Image (cartoon, rainbow, N blue to C red; front, side, top):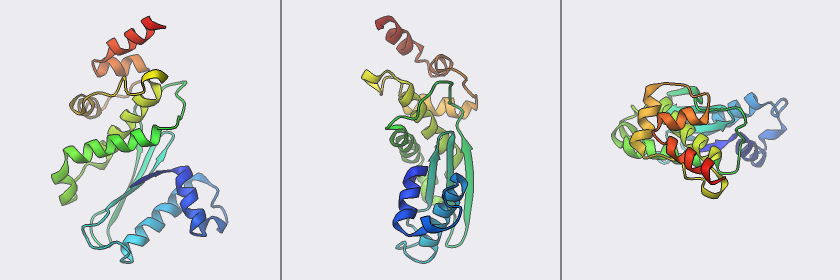
Length: 185
């Protein structure tokens, strides 16, 4: 379950936690939200040990993930996106496309999800890749650059950081999508 930093603020506001000193600080919002989510699971609000085991907050440069590995064991991971470019704008839909990438990754790795061995950093990079491709695509077709999952996973596992959209599209073997868009302008 992932929320944006702003959505985390709304959850904290609704639960009265926004009254705490210093809560406006972005790091404090993230820490407070994730602690509240982990406490909710730890205190038995979650139905059983097979319930939700991943919470996260999407940030403009990546995500912070809390992963449960048992009733009282959590790992926190900060993942920085390798797919940010100068001029990228945080548009409506970036968080949704991030979650779509995460869900696609989990769906392809269901056994690892079930047994608690899911590579959360790889899952988050897949989400970051989908978000970057979505927000950098032409407005008329926001899905133009979203690749098939195998192509996305290949780029994620390659570990490269992409400095420009054309470099990323070339890495995805989708450079023709960019050329077609430019030719139409």
